Amino acid sequence: MVTFRRSIWHEPRPADARPIGRLDWLLAGAFAAAVLVEGIVRPDLAWRPLVTVLALALVPALLVRRERPLMAVLVGWGVAGLLSVLQVAAHAGDLGLNSMIAVLILLYSLVRWGSGREIVLGTAFVTVAVVLGMYASSTSWTDVFGGSVLLLLVVALAVVFRYRSDLWHRRQREIRNQERVALARELHDTVAHHVSAIAVQAQAGGVVAGVQPEKAAEVLAAIESEASRTLEEMRSMVRVLREEEAVAYAPQPGVADLPALARADATPTVEVSLNGPLTRLAPSVDAALYRLAQESLTNAVRHARSATRVRIDVRREGDAVRLRVSDDGQTVPGPAPEPGFGLLGMAERAQLLGGRLSAGPGPEGGWVVEAVLPVEAQA
Image 1 (tube, rainbow, N blue to C red):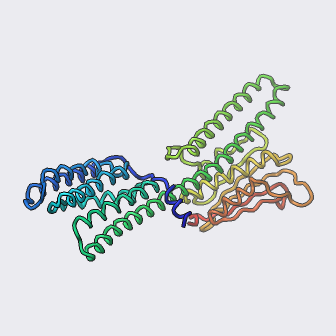
Image 2 (image 1 turned 60 degrees about the vertical axis):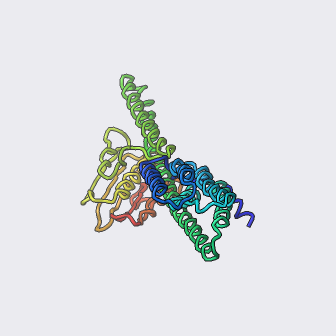
Image 3 (image 1 turned 30 degrees about the vertical axis):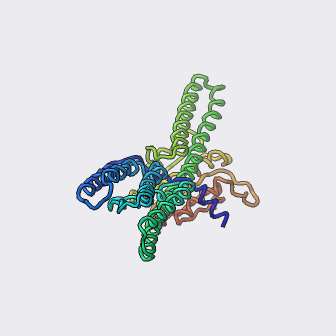
């Protein structure tokens, strides 16, 4: 029980309490008009000028009820309590305006948008004000029961909406975290690919510099261009990872961008083959095929021994798409090595989409990575 109370006391204020808006001004204006009309048309109301002026004090409370719920409750229910004290002390007639029922809106706002500390303090203050009002009005037990039920219904309604809003924001944070994990995986794949290309260019530059010094400048320019693209993509993805709000960024590459990976002027050469209708794939599948091909190509360039050719083949097979990346490198006899983080991440990406991925030595030598993904990703 102590833990429960402490958790409520330290509960933060919800994040959806927005500043004063048009609806707040309309509500405050409607309340002010109702108070003035009632103050004019009710001759049976004692101390009408004073009661009307005090009731108008709720107007600013209604305006700030989202941003300052505790202050709004203290002002609104404080006025109600003050009227009850005056009624008891002066033995006056009815000092309550029917429009003062707007204090229920302030109680709702307290539970809906207040922090745990504000809710505890505010509800205690409201309880005192309600007891004073019931004592001043000499209400029957039936009225006491009805009034208590009404207050509890207002509190319950606020709790329900607060809980639903919290669930919605929690879901948004989960979606955001999932997006960040996906972007982190994209960052790994992209950087690994570009860094591998830079390494290949640097190795080629070391050979060219000794034989054809005039071509060394071309190799350095290619390295500079590749490094610039790497930094640009890293910065754009890291910006998305760090910022809470959504930011605009370029669409992810897909199967249609695979031909850009082909190259014939370097070793190993890269060939890309696309077969079948590949234009109506789910966006997640489309992006996954590109990243799987890119990562497989990166692994072939970095790890394939004496490879001279890498082939990327994508073909449509009914309701599935098959990706096959193979090289002609030399395989080392013996048991297959344990898969690294790259292969594990690729397999995880395929499984999340309802597909499968395998990697190992090819029947004719070299290394083969094969992935089969459904055209429509599983939910």
